[in-house]
Amino acid sequence: RVQLVESGGGSVQAGGSLRLSCAASGYTLGRSCVGWFRRAPGKEREGVAAINDGGFTLYYADSVKGRIIISRDNAKNTVFLQMNSLKPEDTAMYYCATNARFNIRRPESPVEYRYWGQGTQVTVSS
Image: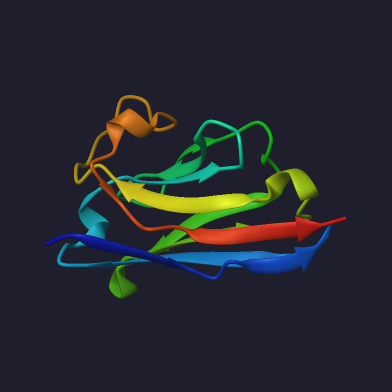
């Protein structure tokens, strides 16, 4: 059974940083693309970043470019999301997901992903 578990969320002030982790069990995460998504209250789920099996960045949302870095450590079966210069509008539940495949057509689209974690809350105060 594939399980993804996010961690690292929390409450920070604007300008602060957080590092989110997405750890997998029951599956070798290094075989597939992984994406990070977020859902703010009252808003649709949106893609934040995505990375392929080889560690190449596939996608960053325009709203986070220059502030967020996605990376992976296949030896630890984990994908990370380093978030810097956080803004109140970054407040959301953050989810990681994998499509369990090497390739992906639209890394920013939730429909491309098969397995999802339960999410970790990020709250940024002004």
